[in-house]
Image (cartoon, rainbow, N blue to C red):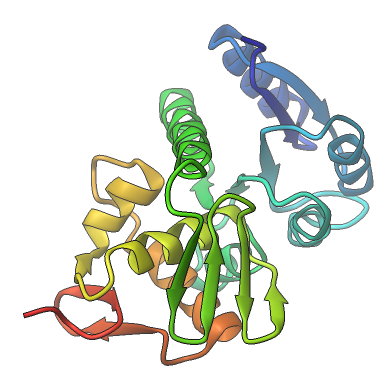
Length: 228
């Protein structure tokens, strides 16, 4: 089995070198770029399985990098930010990042997040062998092709957005807590990162309609009418 490929886009050489070395020790094939344009070009050239992306970059920032690579290559993105403001995090998640980490971060935590994202990619590929089409109101989910249509329009979703809406649609009516969704979609056992879930739900509502996913106040989210 070929090793998974990761692109690291980070302009701080010390951080980039440490991240690259640690991920290579984990068995990944890793290549790096030091600015926004070089990062987009590298992703276009090698089509990695995952991107570790700094928010603040020369050339153009990580938000623009994320927009561009998600338009062409819907792949998981782990965003690194030196700031922990609500706005920075929500904007990053809104343009297609799957998760974020705030600097300074633990190398062990970074590796754990990367492995969790990779496991989700593998699990999503396995889902392609399941029911080919799942319908949720006006939304049609093509599981094998990982495509979504609303009416006659095909909607572009990031990998995490697709996995989240498919999970909710496959368990229509079931209410999931944020902690459950973090465990089952992101693969995070600690339940931290509730606003990550909230941001992805907001993005899905913008793309697929405000009424598709309902909020169950004090509990979490569900798709469709509550069972029972």
